[in-house]
Amino acid sequence: MSSPILTMSGVSKAFTGVQALDNVHIQLRAGEVHALMGENGAGKSTLMKVLIGVHQADQGCITYKGEERAFSSVLEAQQAGISMIFQELNLIPHLSVAENIFFAREPLKNGLIDYPTMQRKAAELLKMFDIDVLPTDIVNTLSVAKQQMVEIAKSLSFDVEILIMDEPTSALTDREIDALFELVDKLRAKGVAIVYISHRMNELKRICDHITIFRDGQYVSNHRFDEISMDEIIAKMVGRTLDNHFPAKQAKICDDLIFSAMNVARAGVFAPLNFDLRKGEILAITGLVGAKRTELARALFGADKLTQGDILVHGVKQMIRKPSDAIKAGVAYLSEDRKLNGVAVKMSIRENTTMASMDKVSNSMGVISHKAEVEAANTFIDKMAIKTPTVEQLVNNLSGGNQQKVVIGKWLFRDAKVMIFDEPTRGIDVGAKYAIYQLLDELASEGVGVIMISSELPEVLGMSDRVVVMKEGQMTAMLNTPETNQEEIMQYATGVKNMFPELEEAI
Image (cartoon, rainbow, N blue to C red; front, side, top):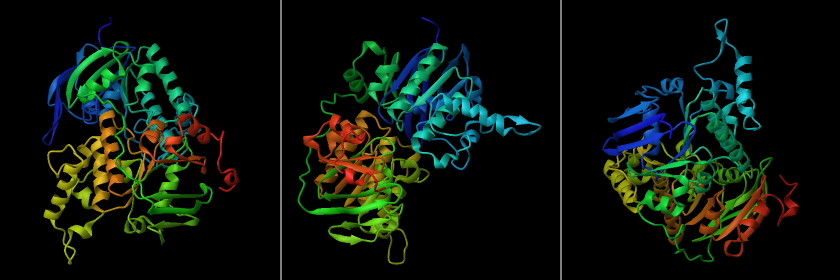
C-alpha cells in the first residue's frame, strides 16, 4: 500500500467542558474515498475542522505529505491543497456565485477585479454539475440544493489534494448526486484523497473504499468498506444494535380536527389545496426537489403570504399574516435550515428555549426571571436527552441532532398544538434520527398534530399516518400510509399519476 498522504494521531479537543475529541486518529491515502462515520456529536466534523485550521487541537500530531503541520486558518489549509465542503452552507448571501467562489482571491487586471475572467472560471466549474446556475446569480436567490453545488464548486476551485465532504448531498436531487459521484470518481482517478462524511448508507456503498468509525469523540475502528456490513457499522456507531429504524406508534388518532387548510394557495408558487390534520396524527408532505413543500409550510406559518384560502385551528378561522399570528394560534414551524431560521447559535440553550415565550418567564413589569428560564431549559434538556454540560452551553457548540432538540423544546415550551417539521432529520445520524422519531411519536401521543415534510420515503412510510404528495406546486395525492408504498408515492411525485388533475393549471 502507498504511504499515507495524511496522518492525524492522538488528537484531542475540548470546548467549555465538552470533550469533543479524545485521542483519536485517522490515516488517509491518495486516491481513496474514506468514509468518516459516527453519530452527531461523535467528533467527525470537529476533527476535520482541526485539520483545516478552524480549531486548534489541544494535543496530537498532524502529518501531511511527510511533514508535521498545524494550519492556522482555512485559507492556509486550502493553499496547501486541503479543502472542505461544510455541512452548513458557508456562502455570503448578497454576493454573486462567482464572487463567492473566488472570494478574497479574485483575479485582478490593472489592480481591479477582472470580472469577465472570474465569471468565466466560475462557469467552467459550474459546468461540471450541469446545473441551471449562472456565475452572476446572487446566492440568496438560489435554492438550498443549488447553493450546495456552489459550495462544492468553491472547494474545487483550489488545486486540491485532500477534499473533505461533510454531508454534501443532503439537499441534492438524485441527478445532482449522480453528477457529484461522477466527479468524485474523476478526482479519485487523479489521486485526490477524499474524506466523505455522510449518514446515507446507500451513498457510502457506491463510492467508499475505507471507513473509520467514531463514537462519543473517540476512535472505534477502521475497515475496508467491503469487509463490514451496514448493521455492523451502525452497531459500532451507536454502541448498540437498532433492530427497528422507527419506533412503534404510540399515538391514537382521534376525530378532533386540530388544523385545516382550506383551498389555500400562493399565486405562482403552489396551486389551491385542501387537507385536514387530526389530533395525534402525523401527516407527511413529500415530493421531489421543486415540489414547493417548504413554500407551503412557510405560507401556513405566515412567513410568506397566502393569496387565497383559509386556515382553521380547532375549527376556528385564523388570520395568519405573519409568524407571530401563527404562534398565537398554537402553530409552530421548524425550518429545514435550523441554523438560519431555527435557533440563535450564538445564544445559550436557556435563551433559545424561552425566546418564543418570554411572557412565561417574565413578571408583570416585563422583567425576565433567570430562575424561570433555567427551570424551563432543564425541563426540556431532561425530556429530550439533550447532551450538554449546562443550560448555558451555546447552541453553536451542540451537534446537529441536539440543536434540533433545542428547537423542538422552544416550541413545546410555547405549548404549540400544531408542529410543522421541515426535513427534521436532515444531516442527522442514525441514532439521533431514532431519537427525533421518538420525539415526534411522543408529541403525537400527547395530542399534538404533526406535519412532517420529508424527502426520505422510508421515513415518510415509517412515521406518518397519511401522506400528501406534491409535484411542482400541485397536490397530486392524499394517501393512507398503511395502504401505499414507495413506488406509488414516486408515481405521484413524478406526475405519472395524479388524483387531482383539475388543479394542474391552477398555479
